Image (cartoon, rainbow, N blue to C red; front, side):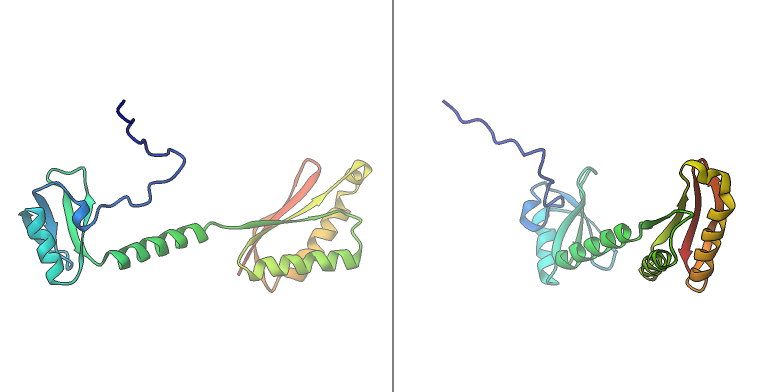
Amino acid sequence: MPSKPIKPDPKKPEVNKQRINEQIRISPIRVISDTGEQLGVMTTDEALKRAREVGLDLVEVAPNERPPVCRIMDYGKFKYQQRKRQHKTQSQHAKIKEIRLRPKTGEHDLQTKVNHARGFLEHKCKVIITVVFRGRELAHIEEGRKVMDHVLALLEPLCKIEAPPSHQGRRMVCTIAPK
C-alpha cells in the first residue's frame, strides 16, 4: 500500500517563504544584482555561480513572475532587516492605558492613580482618565469635574490633552498623550 503524501500543517506558519540558493529549481530566472542592477535572464546555475563569486546568496523574491525574479543578496542580513522592520511596526501601535476614578476618591488614592498615569506617560502610552458616577453622584457632576481638573493639573507638565473632558452617560472621560 503506497504511503500518503505528507500535507503541511495548517496551524504552523511557513517558516521559509523565500527559496534560496539550491532550493530554486526552476530555470531560467531573471536576476538582479546586489546593487539593484538588472543582470537579465539566465539559468539558475549561472546565477548561483555569480552569487557565489561575490560571496552572497541567490534569493527568490518574486516566485509568481515568469520568469521568476531572483536577487543576489546577503540572506542573513535580509532576514534580520525584515524582523527589525516587523518589530518596529508592531511596537508603533499606540498603547492606551486607563485610570478610573470616582468623584469621592480620596486624596492619597488620587496621588497613587496620578503616579500610575505618570509612569504610563513616561513609557509613551496614551492615558484615558475616566471618572465613573454611581447612583446619586450623577446629580453632582461638578464634583467629578473638580477631580478631573485636579488630576489634569497634576499631570500637565508631562502630557497634552488629546480629547478634553466630556460627559458620556455615567462617565466623564478625558484622553491625554505624552508630550
